[in-house]
Length: 309
Image (tube, rainbow, N blue to C red; front, side, top):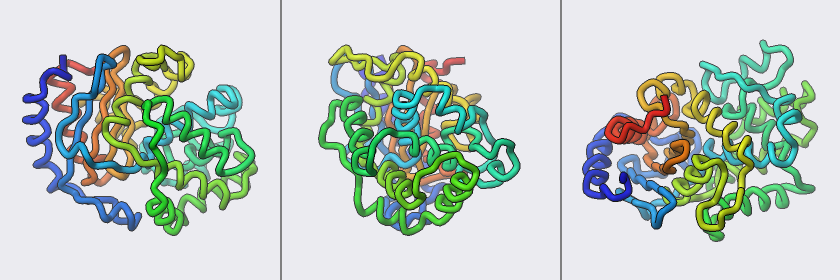
């Protein structure tokens, strides 16, 4: 039904676009600071045909923290729940996504969840492979399967920019290595992690990934179980509890949709047994979420009664 309401979606996205003036692009990563803050695009996929796409649909962007959902899925498939969650917790946090304080005060010294940077670094260390290239290749192949788009690659310019400004992530990684959360060489892990975050997609790609997660890990065209059922459910749970940084609780109340954001301005949402949504709006609020994207998802949720609660 939503995919047929193109005229309504056009109106909704233009209404949400007015909120871009209240946000700022992610200036702490130089390559992301180059984005146009007025851009806003939306894609919705229901498995029945092409995505319904409105706004600046030709824009591509990097996954950033949205990649945390995908690396978690791959690590769980590679290592199993017992090993992954022996190194990373399952609890939400009210702290910023790049905070180090809980690593220092928690016992044992493991990250609270996979959606904060420390947790994502630990998860990425558990992707199987003998080299950065092999691990990244496996992650890209996984994304190709989810989207049906074999052309997806990482943006080398963004990856290099992130690696140059990765001192806080480097600190998190050295702290965790000292406390035996992982054994990888820190620079090798950071190289993989920044390339993972720099994987470039469109809103339509994001909506198709969201659709597979929404529908218990099954790809609608191939009928393949790309993500095991129990892992797809874990992903949606983390998206609800931790997916929107330290705004996740308010987002759950106002919107009520499993979603994951990234500081490029992307948001991926998965309506259980329903649609996948991809949004791009690089103007961010003070918590790192797309300010117009949040408003757009709230409007969609209210109009189409999408909340899972």
